[in-house]
Length: 109
Image 1: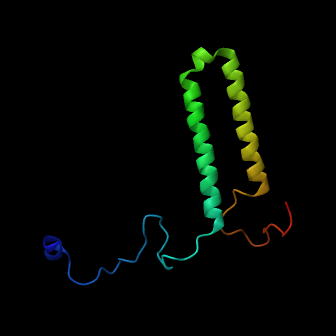
Image 2: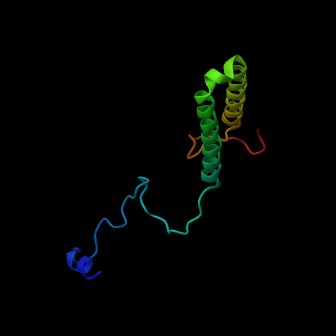
Image 3: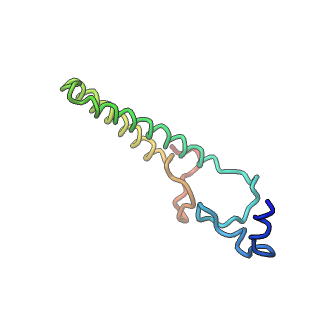
């Protein structure tokens, strides 16, 4: 601790509260509310990332699985694409600001 105190620059760093890893300026308190859409997108990522892990294990055993395994993987990929298409058309993947006049009306969907 003493060495760190000797080596640090005197005074307060001017850019200490500047842009952090996310690229967004730190202009809000640490306990500011996080939009629910953040958690929704995070959940979608975890779900589809897990599916990629399942496809990887299928790829390792593709030769042993044969044609039946290929058909099963095709059905699985098709179900994933249908789920992704549903989320896309429902607007669940839209986050951030929308252009003026393109807001989804209440009750639509």
